[in-house]
Amino acid sequence: MVTSRDVQEVVSKLSSDKAKAREEGIKLLNTWLEGGERSIKFCKYLGQNTEKLKPNEIPHSETWPFLVTLLVQCVSSEISSSKRRLPKASLAKTMRIVIQRANDAKFSGKALPLLPVVKTLFNHISDVLSNVPSFQLEYGIILRHLLAVGDYRFHLRSRIYCSLVLLYIEKVVTSLDGNDSCQGTPKEEVFRCILTLHSLLENPPGDFPVDVREDIVKGFVQIFSFVREEGKISRKLIECINTYLLKDGPNLGSQSLEIHNAVQQFVFRCWLTTRDRSLKDALIFYARLQLNLSRGAADGSSLVEQLLDLVCKELDQSSLSCGSAPRSDATKDCKFGALSGSQRGLIELAALVFYKACVWTAKAPSTEKRVKKEPAAVLLKEALMKGKWLWLVSTCKYCLKYCFLLVI
Image 1 (tube, helix red, strand yellow):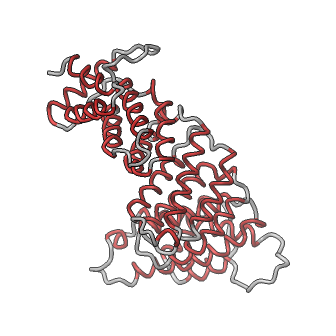
Image 2 (image 1 turned 90 degrees about the horizontal axis):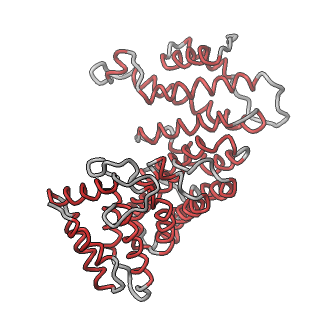
Image 3 (image 1 turned 30 degrees about the vertical axis):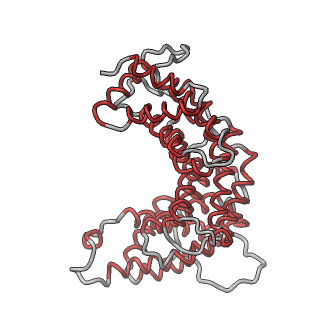
């Protein structure tokens, strides 16, 4: 049974002006949060009291918002008093656990229990992430947790959001920089930074601020100057770009091609050789986004030419992998002519590439000297005559989606 006295004992110690008393308060709070029946009752007690709060009522001392406010003050005091030593990392862990428990539906009967303090919390998180490297792990988790809740992130000020995006772009650049790699930045730490950057790009507090757009583009250009190998880090970076193009792409104009110029070497090098299906899917989605953002032959013809060659090879490769495999080795999808999710993505891309290639080929020829290549319509005809099934599906998709009659 949890009583008001139990909670007040924690609150009293955390509110103290003395560092030792606050440290005892953190330890006492941790004993209540450790797990088991005792922890459940403690969290439910705070949750029930928070649920009783009226919309404009100031949270009292036995509620989640009040406890979080006290912890913010404790963390700030610990940071300011630890100039010659690292702040105690246990504080950051306690903060993370409290915020997660407060938002856990099992313990909190109230929707958005931290809404009264979330604006202050975002400001605090930004300050800590900017100044306390030892708190990066726990506070990164806290930030991602809060960003995932729509009604919380809408209280994130634009200025704070911009500073966080630029902070994490800088962290990723520094971590990937060859000079910094000598210091041995752990890959898991780099991945967590990218994970938080992705969460920020995926969950802006409204439209992307104009002020940060150019810096984001420059950041991606710089980041991909260091990316050489495929793996979960490069895959997550492509997902970051995809998310950004999806969210803010229509406002980028020619800046989307700046991103492509930086990314294309990695994309085209890995496309046909990677065995990472998630990376391949991300690359296919990236290509579709960039094609949809290209507004005309002037800024997209080069991209279309690159992708036409790549898609043709991919369709040939995918058709052969099913058509030439022994029946016992063929995948279930191949046996029954069904399309996997990855193949559907490829076909969507192929249809779009064929459409762009045929439409732009029909326009006035460029004065630039280029290697003569077969028109898309001719490539389609030759592949269809060979009976390549993925080519057939792609052509059907092309005709159905873009209502364009081929003359072949």
